[in-house]
Length: 461
Image (tube, rainbow, N blue to C red; front, side, top):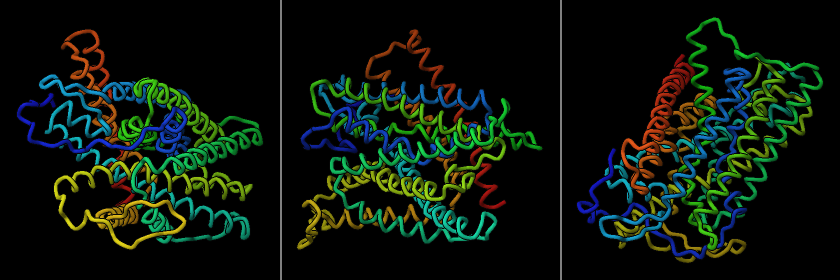
């Protein structure tokens, strides 16, 4: 996908418009948004991923994908301010999709738009699945504590998905990402809390049993082909855990100046990726060391730990609270995209008008339109419906991570950087970035095939 001809595309309006909000963001608020969006419940699946890969390949894979994610963050930060060479106009790209459209052209913007829609939607689905698993795990934990670890404690996950969906329908009426700072801070605190609980319980288990379990080769299987598929799923899980390219420019657009937003965002990205990778390594390593070949798919919901039950309950409650905020961080990006496009396309539509006589006394005053109410409610309902059909945590994580990792985290950032910086073909920088992109494409195809096999086997096997 080469850069488009801008002269032929002047009639196409940008897919996202700029915002007039006062910019008050700092490194710390950006870090809160970042952590809320990145350190998700996927961190608790990393012990399972490390178990599939083994003691060498597991941690190494986490570090390599973290470095890839950091390179991508730097490339994306550089294109926040872009000057069109055909007309000299300077544009601030307030979203990933807007950047692709402005720099690579309208056709690339359409392709990216489809991937963005899918990526944001699948993240919502994963969050619905995970929240339901965690709420059900709290009930299981209490039941096992009262009735014994071998008790037949069964609870339907569908009801918890519906409960989470109702919460999100209400939370989705928050106007935009500028109004979610408090939600991001709560989500970031919760993510640190439950990650620390997972790490602490894993280390306590290792100390109690007096040995570090696991092997260099990871979990052994009787079927070599099955081992290949599990490795692919594990890499996909790790890739999903570092998928943040879509929210980076949205976060950067909230930062105040000086210093420049690019400098602040690169600093934030470096801190966030370092913190994230450190937590991922600790959580993955402690879980695998504690359980070895019996490592569960999710440390706090797979019931590797039964006691102390109240701490397991608290950790799962923190996950749910984090997912409420994390769902909004990603969904607000999609809401903004669709609603700005619809408002520009149909400015006189009745859906864009405010709903009269709506006021909730304890909420800050904000506009509520029919479009916001109808579209956002429908979106939440759809994510819940898909989650009910495919409630498989590790398989959905792997599929979600593999299908969008290369195009959104690697390909588009590299191509935008080439155009923005006018990188000469076959120069040293060009060759390095091409090799980097090609290697990531190969890995993505491998993980996609493995995750599809796992998802199909789980659903229809």
